[in-house]
Length: 177
Image (cartoon, rainbow, N blue to C red):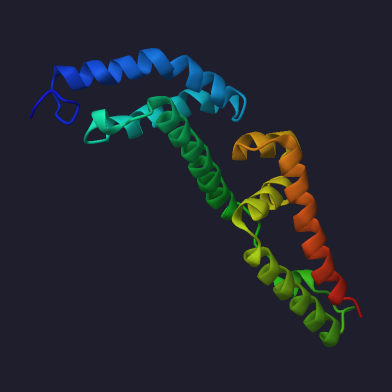
């Protein structure tokens, strides 16, 4: 292979080392504002690993833009993986244990219908709005942590959370007898 950045020669390694030297502190600062401190080194490494997997490093016309776009994608991927892992961490719900004898079959059916409508509405939300809601409500994260995890401003996270609550409140309002 040649040394143009598309091979695995000394020039390619030098180019990768140059990227690390020039952008490691910038990426560390970027992630420090958006992720938990213990996740920062892994996220920085993830960006450079993605870069190292590229076949032709010379094809990158704007390295800084490429790296920070990749950094944003790494944050989103990490948030999605965390949400998936957390989905399996819930307690199971045994209907027979939780639905007491005091509830009529009609009321149980109404409750199930309301839950179904809320689930449909939650799935229909735009992904980022749903992610804000899930991290805030189901994960119990503070709004600042939600914003940092998703790489958005606190104000945007608050706005998305309000939109999610408004949509779900309308659906829940329809379920009232």
